[in-house]
Amino acid sequence: MDDDIQQRGMDLLAERAANLLDFISKTAPGFLVETAKNGSLVLNKGLPDYLEASYNKCETIRTLLKRDSPTLLDDVYQEQRFQSDGKIRSEKEVCTSIGSRLERTIISGGAGSGKSVFLKKLFRRSIEDGHTYYPIFFEFRSIPIGSKKSLLDYVYQSVAQYAPTFTKKQFNFGLRRGLFFLMLDAFDEAPIDIREELVFEIDRISKKYPKCPLLITSRPSDEFRSWEGFHVAHMQPFSLPQCRSFIGKVDYPTEKKDEFLEFVTDEKFEKHGAFLSNPLLASMMLLTFEEYGDIPERKHIFYEKCFQVLLREHDASKGRFRRSYSSGLSHEELENVFTYFCVFSYLENRFNFEHSDVAAVVESAIAASGVSATIPAVIEDFVDAISILQRDGNHYEFTHRSFQEYFYARFAVKDRDLSLIDKVDEIRETGSSDGAIRMIADMDKTYFERNFLLPLASKLLKDLNGVDHGTSPDRLIGKFWASVGIRLSKNDEEQKDQARGMETTIYYSTMYDEEEYPKESLI
Image (cartoon, rainbow, N blue to C red; front, top):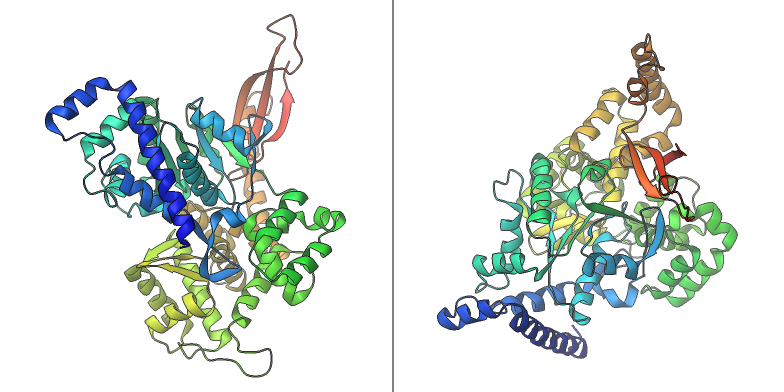
């Protein structure tokens, strides 16, 4: 890490600690009296160690374009826009509503939208700007499968591992006094077997500690509509200026970026904006554009081209010679092993792994592929050769989960032994995103319509036979929509009659969609 950057961070932390001590002395004199007596409850004892470690950890990120070394977050960070309560809001507006007005908020965004990066930026910003909270950054993925501990126990442990002198009593005190800003990352990566309990705990934390700002990130889900007191802020796709700004910041040869930016005109962005709508997709597009000089029309072709670029980047040159992989496998064999790795891990709802976990899945993938290779060598190729997995100590995760969905979808289309309905049901049982389902439909529309939609349509017609839509509209609507709700909101235009100033809307939504579907005013 650059010495100047590190020193700046330490200076900010020192100033932050001083501000908090002043804040505590004004708001908790009784506590300080107790502390003076027994010396056991000094809130800042140990916490600066946690802040320092987490501040440094959130300073860098790994990017698809620079996989061999970390990138400074501040160098590539792109401000985001959000849709909340029917309005487009700036990043500053959303952060203010959380930190100042204590609005419980869920940041909802699809794959690659930058949710975790946004949270890291907010963590650092909360220190640099001197808010009157200690920020706590917690990742749901750190909760083990089959966990019996409470969410707050894990949050506390995430702090205590960097601050051994910080006690549970201090933690509880800080929660009661509203001294912590709880930033909980990637709810969708929490073990599926305990998510219902986590929802209950989150609701309890929100009500028990109302003075603590609470922010959660996740992939989109309709279940958030039922979370009492929570606002959902949907991350919006990049606009053309945002996309161009982000590409201009990334660490990539200038001449290649300039060529790409020249290609992305207003017309091209209007046509292909879906492939440039967030940091991950824009990075992947830059990577594949250099190789192919164009933007693919379909999403699965886009992912296929990107993966092939990652494979070919391992070659010593574009000539005949190919550098061998540590596993001794060919391109095609390694790709096949990785396909099974994605299938098995996706169905187990695994997106990140400890070493023993990744080794077990790789072992199964090697066996299913029918190739001869050692487990450590295949893992090394996944991490170092094609950079499709990232390693952090004993922890592994996908460069991005989108690749896992893509390879599962490709396998589902190719394999015809199991019915497509059963394959889709398997996806639903994992609680995963329906991104894989969309890619299945994109890869083979005929197969999807004939083997999935047609059987479902036939069953639907049978189920609807005899349903009176006049007397039982709920039964009819329930066949098509995951949820139906009614919302009351004030009209934009002022009206003298208060009753007429309220607008009643019905909204319909499908699982995992960010958008609300046709709204109809009932007044």
